[in-house]
Image 1 (tube, one colour):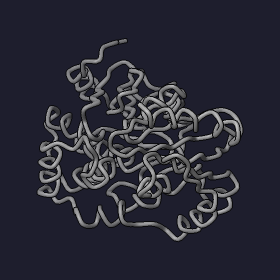
Image 2 (cartoon, helix red, strand yellow; image 1 turned 180 degrees about the vertical axis):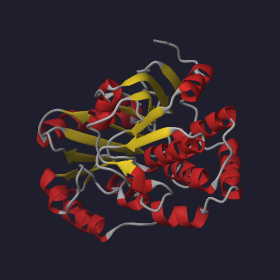
Image 3 (cartoon, rainbow, N blue to C red; image 1 turned 180 degrees about the horizontal axis):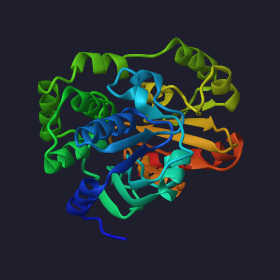
Length: 324
């Protein structure tokens, strides 16, 4: 296996060009960048005549079902063999879930494309660029190298990843090049206003009902606002995977909060910890210490144990992060 932090553009491109059957997966509880990356790459490689399978545990979330090709994304994998597996927007193998585990066991070559600084460099070839604001930004660079032209079907999911991971170009890693890429994608036909409305300014009634259940658990202590989502909360509303329906992003907008955290009880009894931080504070270091990963302002980890045990472990670490 190639173990280097230098992007393997040539090797990965060659693997794609030589492959006939390709499977594309991303992390569990997919966000806009994960789903946008799957669909952008899947739609692009179909233009090359490749036999493509796209899959993510639980399938496409409701907010992204408008994206071109969303209906072709599978909710699970239990058959198939592939020449190449492309893992997108996932810092480690565990985050790829059941779809990733099956695809990895049934693919000859694994390409890891990601922008998380905590990436473990799994797989045979890596295109990991932590300076990129989204995995879709990296994919567009790859498409240029592959000679794949931008179409509406490619540009729209690319823009979705770019906008959601930068919260509408508002994160501290946005550069002039980020805005230029946004313009390029809009020029290619990506519907900017629709993507913003459906991803950043949209909530289902089911999400509102979940928030209604959970918001009573919100607590603000020493600049840290927290909430708890129990398994019964998301299951009773018909969610197939643990979720806070974007609540952690809402909590960080609280004026008095510097860090927001949501503790989500999972199907298997572990706790999924989602963290957000305002400028000047770092939750990535906390996530890595807990066995997870992410970015300075948005990170997470999955921790075995009860809600009470995990909260008592994580809250002191977050208080320490405020003092750094």
